[in-house]
Length: 283
Image (cartoon, rainbow, N blue to C red; front, top):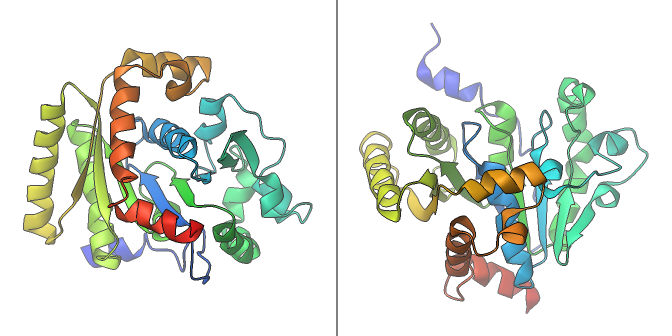
């Protein structure tokens, strides 16, 4: 019979999906993940990238979803080239990255291209060295992982230095978030995980949901998950998604935007390890 440990091992890829370079001053890599779709993970990644770029932090968003590819949709962009162009030897990885705003760049995926999904191992072998080169060009790399829990998602998370786990107070979303933490605890216990609750009714609901979640992970996994913050339910988020204009651009003073601004301001505080990593590169 297949025990739980065996099932967890099935999720772990042979190596990082987006390999990090060995240079001393590497970009700060953050995996924005969720476990469950529909919790606003990509919306958080895109808008967080905008806020970081506005602070002069050269930021790259990697669209990690080879199946759905939400980042171009949320930003209203139509990339001309994708991973398949690199896989076919027509272009280099840096050549398919395109600017979205000042200091903010996007690395698109295959836009649901089945040939990439069918050639995952060849894709990884071919692009391993090219992904390593990204660290020399950017201060922060946000990896917007695919939804769900699979070896591909875990490989994307393993490529990061920090994990922002986006979820909601909904039980199903909490359950999938717990599964992500369980896998990381099993294989990468030292990888920091910060939890962000989305679609909350109030800051109090977000904090209470986090405290309950953290009590469970401490009790059953011996793992402490840090609190990143909570984002309120805001109908403007749906409107901005429909118009394909990011929330921070279309509704900069909305409840969602103001709260995310506060979260990113805390993250980039000079005393925070994220800002320390970025300052080290610049200095």
